[in-house]
Image 1 (cartoon, rainbow, N blue to C red):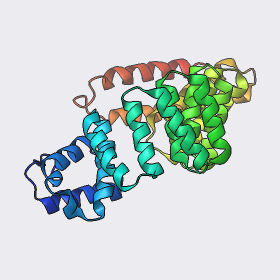
Image 2 (tube, rainbow, N blue to C red):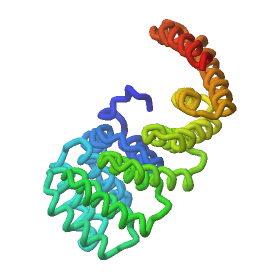
Image 3 (cartoon, rainbow, N blue to C red):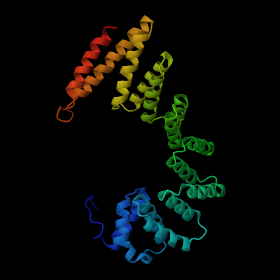
Image 4 (cartoon, helix red, strand yellow):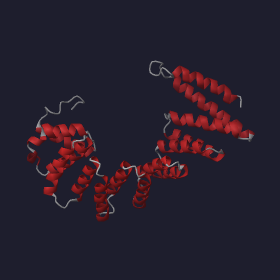
Length: 295
């Protein structure tokens, strides 16, 4: 199947296999799922056998993504008839309430689901999503903290918490969240680069030194990370400008010049047609090299 496939014209078996493949691979493709259902599969859903219920769940979620609340309700009704006491169906109902902005009713359902199955992380995550949709940032922070007491090694939760703390201007706690991410996924350069950004933002000799180390670590993990290369340049330049230790000043200055040389080398390989601003950037870097070298 290509990106230009007309999903309304495929056969029933092709539609069935496509939906199955997307479910197994975790691919969302919501509009296409709805299209396949309405034009192909819905003609004879009973032909799916027991697979019908997995498809209905898939179509329900896709319908909510596509603002097709009517179709989502049809799916929920059929699933409820088949599984009247299912928490998975109840979760779909709560998601539908979210989509129609009935947040309080959705929260009540999620609270019931969490109470019934405290170790199911999806219920707690949906609850956080509702709180964020309501703009209740502090409540969302509390909910994520409660979640992390059980699911400590969830980097996505720590990253979300870090972003919420940033919105509260609490950089120290945001730093702690990213440090947890680094412990969980020590080969993810993004976490180290963001830590470098936060430490650089905090300022002060100690934080700038931490920033430099985080940028260096990020670049070691991902040598193509241009932002980390800039981070190394800026942090070393800051150290060279502020330290009173002559040896440190010289070392930081040389490291900054080396970072500029690396950046210049990268930009010289870029065609002006691909990046019209590359010549201007090169001129700025060369001018900065003169300034840094004079320190």
